Amino acid sequence: MIDSFQYDVVGERKIGHIDGIAPGAEFHRRVQVKRNNLHSDTVRGISKLVDDDGSYIADAIVLHGGYQDDHDDWDTIRYTGASPDKDKYEVKGVPRLRRSQSWDYADNAALKRSYERGYPVRVIRGWNGDSRYSPINCYRYDGLYLVTDIRTAIAQSPAPDGTPIKICQFDLKRLPEDRQDPTALEGQIADLLEGREGAPEEGLGSEGIADEPDEQAVGEEEPAQQEKFPETRMTRIQRLIRDNAVIRNVKRLHDGECQVCGLRLVGPHGKPYSEGAHIRPLGKPHRGPDVEPNVLCLCPNCHVGLDMGAFVIDDDWSIVVRAGVFGLNVRPKLKQRPKHKVHLDYVRYHREWWSSR
Image (cartoon, rainbow, N blue to C red; front, side, top):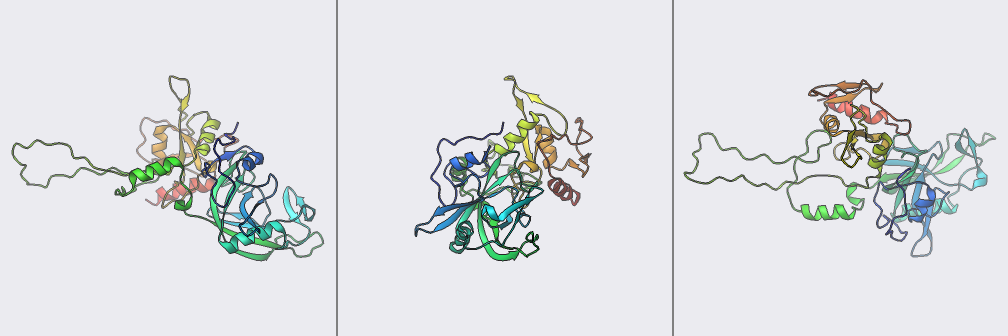
């Protein structure tokens, strides 16, 4: 069962984030998405909202299969507008159009107006989208995007009678992380850390490096009879805090079993302990997405091994030990589950990153 529910405290539907819901939150079906004020409809792709002047604007879109002219690349999206149901039909499950789209159609006009007014829109991805970013049998709120360009384009497939189809096409770009509203916990951490020196990042997936104590200069005489105390340093831990539904989902599907070595740690309460590890890390310079196809269920040792490049994964899912793994019997191949599809793009990124070092 996917982690999905009606949030206890949810803000009203508006432009931007909905209060109480962080990017990464997952919902079982569209009805939960609507009840949590992320989208106005349970079927349509474009959600509409009345602006202050009484005109309709778009506040959210859903990516869940869609037209063949759509393209999702996480940070950027190319999105095809909407049409009345009578203008649509399907070929092998992929929507096609009988006639050209119109900018006067209410949904397209609303999204066009959000572009003209510079309003961000919420993006919700479903399980039937691009395999690199789709959640597992649910819908996931993935944050705010800005419509950066619009155009009339010619669809890849013509109408049934061979006539070219004109479509309303939108380009969207994900807002930077500092524009993705922090959760209450992130805000508290940011307040505590404000003004402190940041520790340098090192390696793949590092969350902060503590300062090393100063060494005494060679030949320098110590002061006589002076009691020495360890020097205290202030350090900053850099960590991205998100709704952890993605990681919970992956760990649940594997029942806490490490995909690399097979270890399943169980505590005295009888519950397994495991860690969700991003293959392509979230922060700079990697900018990996916080999505299930980019997450592995690992034991703590294998999590560290992944982050430091002690092993990489080949295209046939073979685990290749590079260095520094002693006393750890890794599997010949990464163990996968039918419902958890790790994507090769992230495995290749991780492997190429460490192969170049």
